[in-house]
Length: 106
Image (cartoon, rainbow, N blue to C red; front, side, top):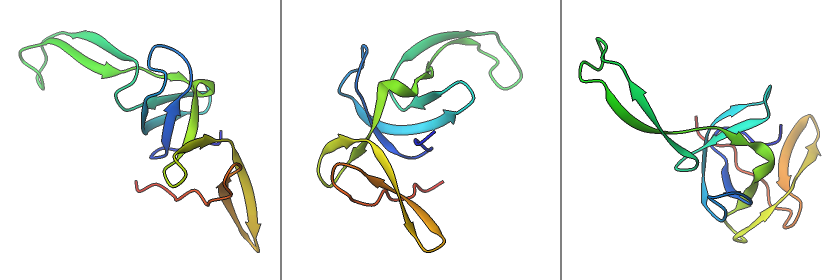
């Protein structure tokens, strides 16, 4: 999977189409990503030790990775991902602009 946690992506299909946001989690086994503020669901919680009130919370649900593309902030466009070898280092680059993808802070 070419998308990593912390990358900036743009949703290219579905109800949230056009939304630019950051990836919170990646599930490569199921080819899904959780994007901040996208695919919000309401979940009912029972009262527990940590949450004695219980109630309803809103949280992001995973969406398929094919519904998002990496977003290049410099050129303000989406692009596919390529790889560039510099000696022993393998870096990700945007295919459209050739800009290097900055590694996200964890």
